[in-house]
Structures are given as structure tokens and as C-alpha cells.
Image (spheres, rainbow, N blue to C red):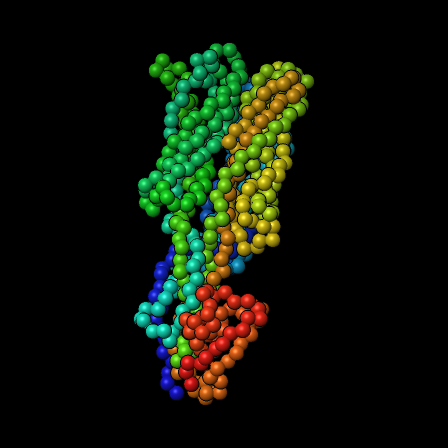
Length: 529
């Protein structure tokens, strides 16, 4: 018996993202923090905030080891001789090991940390209790290359029949994480006194838009500043300041082109605000520096003609196939909606000024429906205000607003299982207005940016084995066959089973295309014997 030969396939190198696994874990932190000796005693905590920093992500076989820290800051009412307020910051390190099926030593895992809950309480005037619940979402996505079979290298004649299929798919052109540094100098409004001491500030990117240029990604939006400070002049005069700073920056992306499909995620990794002197030597300037973490992916839509099957009328062909997954873009959608809420202030004193209202959107569930994706989550808001209370002039209130929003996605059905998505939720606008001494109206515009894919599970021809046919079996077949089409039959499968070409079968039965129906009668004439 002769050894089998292999037919060489024409191939196209196709770059894609191969998702190997996802995992989610939660880290609970509970630690005490002692004030430094030079810090004044704590009378009451006014405000707190936290941010998670990932220091190390180490991938081993089936395991991912994480090391990071929770950085926290606290503004408090103090008994200090030089002021009524104190500020402290610290961090709590953590380590976590996550079992992740499919992870290998040389893989790269992306980690998205989110603070679900942060609680900072007083144990005594010199000690704090820090409690936090952190959710870590892990994704193992690797760029991969598929050698897609598109045909045969050498002309085989009509004896070899090929079945091809057109497929629309996204080809990966670039994927990278980068940082962009933003620096600017700001002047205080003329009606505001100079800065004696910055007590508290927050920085929030809002309305960030991305645009692809030739070799670059252009980012624009606003960096919103909320600041509370002690002014010069009157002793201990509290001042509030809100500034919207235009943000315009670019990151290099050599693959970028305006015609591509992109997914760009921007996060404020670090932000600092410091007082500085103006030309007159007064502290009326603000130096703002920020580090933006930019994570981008670029694709191009392609129409591919892929080889799916082959047979021959004069020999045995065995198509050996492998399973691959290609993604097709369903939609990229920016959806915006508004939330209005009245917040009750817990104070009997007169409210003098609203200092800031900062928020964070947390998505809790995303489910497909007919024609849309249903997104539910919460908007967590923290309001800081000044009250006419000598004992506690700065006060805060927390509010949580649930929401459910439909993101329109034509063609999606509730029962679709082979879809995947990326979702970015953020705040475009957040404003407050004092209605009376106990009510504040908050208006928020939330943006949901979603890109949705259909995961197409395909068969790719890995190799085609060619061998001599079984002559005895062929001679057993009759030379002419009448065939009645059954449910599920395809013309290709019938032609392959009886070793006739598609052209011969269609011509003999006066078929203009490959469409056949159950109970149709076909005449088949064997061409070899």
C-alpha cells in the first residue's frame, strides 16, 4: 500500500485576539493605621478616598499571583493649634493567588481592580480602622496568529472539488498599554483669595473621546477639579473651587489609521495638584499634573474566503481540521442617559456652599435582550459641603442611585450565547444645585460605551491527506443512482458521498444553483469505477 501524500494548502496569516480565560476574585482588607507623631489628633473624619495600585502580576501554570496596595487618603477635623483640619494618607499592601485555568508561564493577564466598599472609622483619636472590599477582574487575552486555509497551492483539475465559505471577521492590527502625561498651570479666579493650604482635592476625567489619526490616538475631554482650601486673609476661611480643565493629549500608535475600528480605555492612574506662586509672589497658581493610562486595541474588518472541505472523484481525501474562533463586529455604541435625584443633607446648620459632588459608576450586570443589551448598575455619589457650624464646618453625605439602561443593538437576541463585549461606564456631567437648607438636586449624565462581537466558531483545514481509493468498494457502487433528498441534505454532501463533481450533478439535474428541497429527486451518474 502506497504511503499517503498531503496536498499543500494556500494560507493567509490572520491576527486575532485569543481569549484563554477569565477569573474574578475579591480581596477583603481590615487593618489599623496609627497617626504619625507630628499629626494632630482626630476629632471626626470628614472625607476619605482610595485607589488600588497593582505592583506585580505574575503568571504561573494555572495560577496568577497578584501583589498590590490600597492607597487611601483621609480629611479630618483636628485639634491642631495651627488649623482645624488634618490630612493623612497611607497604604495597605495585599497579595492574592487566583487559580486560572489555561494560564501559562509566558502569558499576560490584565487586571481590572475596583473598590466595592471603603470604610474608614475611628478607633481613638490616634488610630483608624481601614476596611475595604476590592474586586479584581482578570482576563487572559493573547494576540495569536491563525494560518487560515484559503485554497490549494497547485492546480488539481476538476477531479478535486473545494468548498469555500465567505466569512466576515475582525483582524487585530494593534494592542498596547501606554501612558500619557498631562501638565498645565492654572490661575485662581479673581474673586477667590490666595491659597494658604490645600485641604482636599479630587480629579475626575469626564467626557473623554478618542479619535484615530495617522500613527496616533487623539484624546480629548475635561479633567474636573474639586478643591477645598484655606484662604489667605481671614483666619481659617474655607474656600471651595471647581474647575473644568480642557484635556487634549495624544499617544503614539504606529498602526493607527482613521479607517480602523478601535477600542480605547482611559483611566486616571495618578493626579497631583499643588499651590504655586504667581508673578506677585502670592500663592494664586495651581500646578496640575496627571498620568493617564491608555489601553487600546485596533482592528480592521475583513471578508475572508476560507477553505472548508475538499473531496476528489479519483482518490481519497481526508481533511483534517482544527477549531478556531473568529470575531465579527456587531456594533459599537455610545449610549447616554440622565439621572436626577434629590439628596437630603443631615445638618441642622445653615448650608453655606456645596464644595463638590464626585461620583463613580459601577456596572453590576449586563444581559442580552431582543434588540438591546440591558445594563444595570449603580452611581455612587459623595457630596462635600460647608455648613454654618463652628464645630464641624465641612460635612459629607453619600448617596447610591441604581439604574437600568437599554443599549440598542440591532440583531441581538435574548437567547444568543456566542457574543462577547467590552463595556466602559463613566460620567459625562455631574452637577448640583442647593434647593433649600436640607435638599440638594443632583443631575448626572452617564455614558455607556459598548463594543459587541459575535464569536464565530469555525473549522480551519489543517492538512489534507491524499491516498489511493478502495477500488473494490468503488466497483460495488451502481453506475446510476436515483436519490430522494432528505431533510438537512446539502448538494455538496451528496456529490461528495457519490464522488461526482458539483458541476456534473447540477447539469444532469438542471439546477441553476445549489438549492435543493426535501423530496426532490436527483439523478446521479458515477464517473469512475
